[in-house]
Image (cartoon, rainbow, N blue to C red; front, side, top):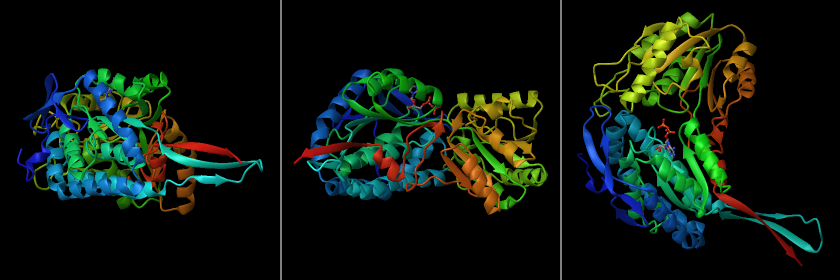
Length: 481
Ligand code: ADP
């Protein structure tokens, strides 16, 4: 791998400030070509325990630092990430597949959490509370929860880590992370830069593991862990929540979605199509806020489909490092096969493929950006999280009915509304049972706003002020006078 800074290619786990081998290794492959990129140390449950021990040992000193001291280390980390953004983006594209421009965007987006929480931690204000009793004085203070453990996915190998680690570290917590084994290189490179930034040994630890359940048990059940935070599928999230229950761990869960994208007859269709492409095709549709069900008012259905077909046809598919590529491969063959299964199921149930609908010759993990019409709510493609570049379109006629259909899912992460009518836009945004709603926009996630879902899409928020509060305990102090 050609990097301007070869130090960023780390192949060992990072525990207590030491780079450690495992008993075996995990192969990391380029999903675009299948080429072996590196072999990374495979961590065990024992490694996870050592990491939790290191984080426990580092906690008292880290929490004692002033917010300003913690912030200055975090700001150095942020600076180093920016200085190495090109290399980090290249590592990310090679192991994950997204186009280089998108990968670079993720590095900057990921870094922005570190900068923002370095600022925000200085404002961990408590309260003085007007007393209920003249002989008592009441106040609150905010304190870091303690050791925080994280399990992160492969779709945003950088940002899903910084979104958790930055507020946790800023609050004064210490951290253990198990990144996805598909994308460990981006994760370990972040540790290298954290070390260079002067983060004390043990404050940030990372264990890559092929045996996720074994390491997951330690991260959710070890009695020294105060809080567990996870981004991944709803099925795994439920399992990990159950494990956290044994020790009443605090937890945050960013789980799956089934995002509706509603195009009303008063929508600006160009805005709607551009927004749809942004939410649907970014990262080859492999984001938890990717549009899953496109509902279009029957009077604009054909016009919208035509415009969307044109926009999809313009996408350039290929290796993420190649100039001009806008859609890369899917993460692995299994993911492509799942998407193909959804297409076949929809066809068998009467839907029509307007564009794409098959694997591509570029490589075994490539699936064509696909437009499907005639979809119904009963089809698997509308019920399940697609996590791939499929745009399934349905018709609707009535506002109340489309709201009901949009809400008829156990998920509640992101929803999209396209309308130029301010009254309707407000009504619909309020009526949707989702943690996040974007109106006339497709890509909305930002450091400064709370990201998260309701229903089976999760618990807690990441980003913004809400994302910081997750890592504090509020202590109520009562003084007799
Ligand atoms: P995805 O479809 O994005 O891979 P997963 O929920 O399977 O979603 O994976 C997200 C993260 O959860 C990854 O880091 C993965 O290794 C981890 N993971 C998967 N299964 C388990 C498990 N049983 N226990 C702990 N971690 C798990």
